[in-house]
Image (cartoon, rainbow, N blue to C red; front, side):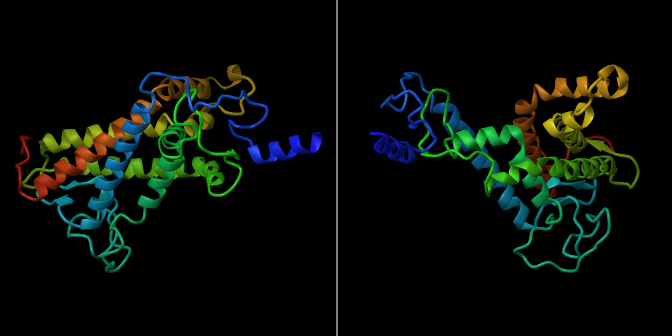
Length: 277
């Protein structure tokens, strides 16, 4: 009698159909539109990925020479393929073939930072991988191994992507400061500066609200009283951390807005609204 039970357990796997779980034939007993949040998440992430991919490869309308506006999708631009003036840190590389984006130095690391982010894991685990698609809804997978095997074990290197994200945020900050440039060569200030600066502020808020940043500030401390500075940093980052999900979405929006505005100005579709020129 014990052998068949063992075989059944093996076939059932470790998911919601495992013998130790309640046996419910229905996928869910929920009557609300539980599928709507995963669907909206999928559409939102897909829209950003499609837009960012296209803009990263087109190699046009990413630099406004008159005002020194540079879209974050092309920063830093380090090859001789970059238009004159857009290489704030020099040209380290020669001409690049068209299938390599001009921001190739940092784009893989930023993608890794976002993909391994704790919130984005939750977002695409639920909306794309259906693990699970929603609370009290059975996932379609027979087994669950978590982040213990390839490829999901790579999620554990998130903290290292965080260090690169901080460096990129510094570069974007430099770009935003450099953009306070007037058409005559001196100080200038326009709507583009507001957008670039707002994007940088949101990027810093998202980056510093990261769980890895919170751990760096206060992790492994046994006595907060002996480390008052780190404790203060930990409390401030913890406040940001509670908004990590909102900041993750806001920064997707500010990145698209910034790039789209720079593209319109660079293409002469619209003129930058200048306050000081």
